[in-house]
Image 1 (cartoon, rainbow, N blue to C red):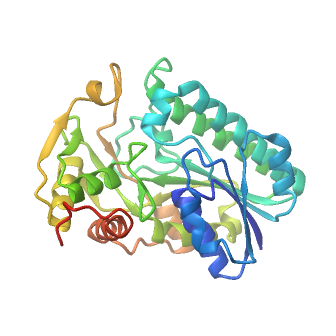
Image 2: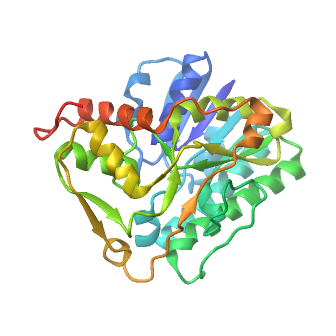
Image 3: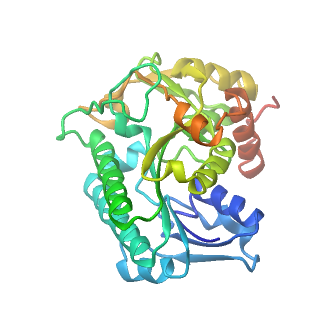
Length: 329
């Protein structure tokens, strides 16, 4: 295939580019580098099958021009991270809504099959054990910027679904549940890289809230092959599919695991949500995916456990950001 990857310089997008190139495909990565980095793609820079285009998904002409060269579109570009959404809600809404519409319209006009990356955030405060793709969405007040990301991604899914049905083109929607791995940073609020970075520097590990909230974390190395396989699976078309891990852990338990696996002497420090994000911030107590549909469609079975995920990220962080406080694991 000749694939277009929007958000290709981001954490997940760059791993997708690596995976596609390694399997003999041509790839064009489109990214405005607002949260991504060209350093994530430096290993592909001299590969003749790869091209990087710097630009925004809000640039309708550029999006049309880039997608006109491909036959498959993986749309991963978005305003991401809790801090980004809370600090810049209008800009984030504009990017996630109008940008997705530009990409999906261009894919439909080109006759290209397309995948839209969504998020577990669409489930909001639904804390059921094992969220299935048809689970109810439980969102907080629309006046709280915390929920603007969930609202926008829900509309992104609807736009993709309608275009897929109306155009007859293959369309897949993936809902990522806390995907983690090398190249991910804690700069935008992602908890595992933030904890790992703090542990390796010997800084206090900052837990927001009381630490009893529970999450499941999936490895990018498990998820990327699944993303590509879903695009080749007709039974997945015009459906949303959960992707993530199945090992549940409290955020306090995560902090303890990071300290143990990195050999750090960091202490755990608790910070209120108000101090971390400002007044009125809401969080969900639990978010656990049911990945049964992905297993049924493509045989998806996460292979990496949480310890593997933490260790992989710590190794990458040590290599790329050496710290004098780092202690060997």
